[in-house]
Amino acid sequence: MNHDQNFKNLILDYPRQALEFFAAEEKYLFEGNVRITPIRQEQLKHQLKDRHRELDIPLMLEWPSGSKEMVLFALEEETQSSRFSIHRLAHYCLDLGEMFNTNKVVPVVIFIKKYHGPISLIQSSHRDTYLQFKFLYCELATIPWKLFRNSSNIVARLNLPNMGFEDTEKVDVYACATQGLLELESDNHKQHKYIDFVDMYANLSNNEKQQYRVKYPEEAAAMSNFADRFIAQGMQQGVQQGMQQGVHLGEAAMLLRMLEAKFGSVASEIKQRIEAADMDELHALSSKLFAANVPEDLWH
Image (cartoon, rainbow, N blue to C red; front, top):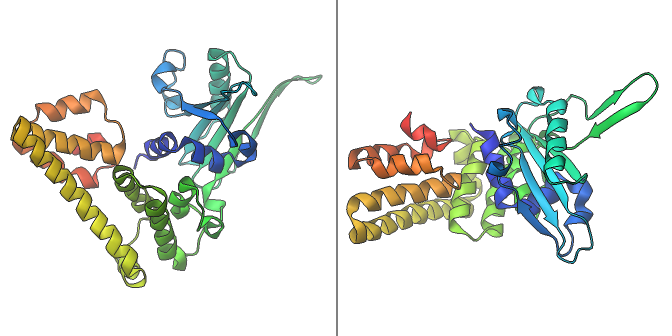
């Protein structure tokens, strides 16, 4: 499971809500008229060559009124906290600050599990301290899920399955997460995209899925109907485009739309492979879509 990409999509789709939840200590910055802009990773690669930094997500906060100086937030998701390096994060923030000529950089780390490592870094001699570095962090597994069960923040609601709960509450957690998605997001493509997010992290067993259908019949029916409508809509759009541009192009376009709905933007290499595929290969690729964790899984 590509957790890094899952969280990158989430933060890029909902940057304000992500900052409000993952960096709540700086919440005063997100109030009022502030513009939050994701900085494209391609802009950073020429200087940040370490491949382990490629999925860090920089966001730029600007105030149109000029009341505050620009602030950069560097968000990083860590699935396994043991792999986190505070030195790597410090390097990244220093590089980011140098690139944008600012000292206002806020590092934020999202840990799915509990983190046991250092949260500050000090470089010094016996006489004096020369460098101090610390970061904000969010340990999802340590947050009681009930604190956010009715939250209006979609990032918090989608992450309920990553928070702390009893095994007997798992079905309720799933229900609250999916309810939040359908209540807070009206875009059909994003709904479909983040139903997958909730499903992946909730990871309900077949027995738990049955409990969900029994305990939340209306919600389960709504979810099922939504999925059916989304698939039918995609098929209908594919047929319409096929009638206009040929059946082959329609099949390829439909698969690309489904990929974008599930994973966000699709790399040009993936698009080229799909557009070059024949009908039999397109059907085979489509059959693997719902089990895929990344677009490349279609060819495995």
